[in-house]
Length: 471
Image (tube, rainbow, N blue to C red; front, side, top):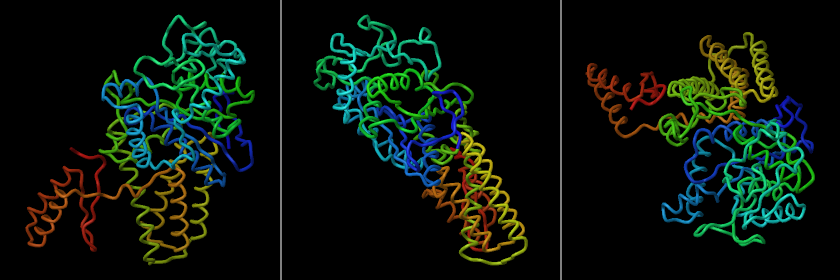
């Protein structure tokens, strides 16, 4: 398997530290609000990578943190007259609701900054003893320029780097690139006692401390969004390598950002969307599909049209899946004609699928293979009515494998018909029963306006959802 390593700026063959075991760490959200679609991209991409490793037989230990103490959390707690813990706990719970909807496998470890204070202070103390950190008025800073490889991850000359994000400009720092490891407490803020006075951890130190606490040494893969390369991940490397004397991670993977209808997503521009609000309209799986339909290192675009297209694409795959399930339960029209050739074709799809994922985890290419396979299954089984039991079984199992790796839970697409819609369906059925076809057609048109299409079959009415809700 080949992966692009941000640290070395090249494609490298992936070789784990220990055979068939992988240690992964993903930077998680700051929990002061619902997660937005920018948060969802690394969640979905690296969950699928984890799934692929599991599929290949690796034992994966996966950690993803929560930043549960931060300026934004403190400010929101003040506004709502709550504690930081109450705010953080509320939105950690909301995170898990969205993560479950996106079909994210729960992390092996989900550490919180507030639960890692002892380890954070231990690392800071050693950095001070090494003279790589200094204290000014209760705040401890890391001497960035003393770390000889500072800037290696971002690939920028040190004289071009700016002060790190989340670090206030002040005159206490010896150098503008120095970053806070420990922040002196302001009046009324949450704090912990320390050798340097009451305070709280800086942003960057928490991930280094969590990795040290959970894994103890170098991990295989550290991942997150491209916006974290500098300063967050750059600072992680500097403080961790200085503290431990070994690499923090052997492979650094970063996903691209998200544009909204061609423009960069931002709250100030008014084009900022949470996962929850999009899921309420389209469901979670179209969101996950969007995150995977481009190579993970390239930017992706969000729009209403794309979400509607994704929903339709998933429904096509689900129709094939349901047809295969029915064919397995009720085998008929069995035929052995060209079965060996067709089964060989299925095996070829599997080879192509794996090839794409082994090539820097190209989920876009893998999805192309999935859709082509679905098209061929539909042609082989249902248009030509050649339902060879061996082919049907293999096709279904292979489709399920692909969907598992990509994390696409098609069971979400089952329609939950609201009471109003169900009443309309019942009224239409009653009109048809009374041969009042004019009323039946009028109700059918009204249902289509609500995003519901009805198919009359010999076994009853089937309900399908049109591409995107119409409200």
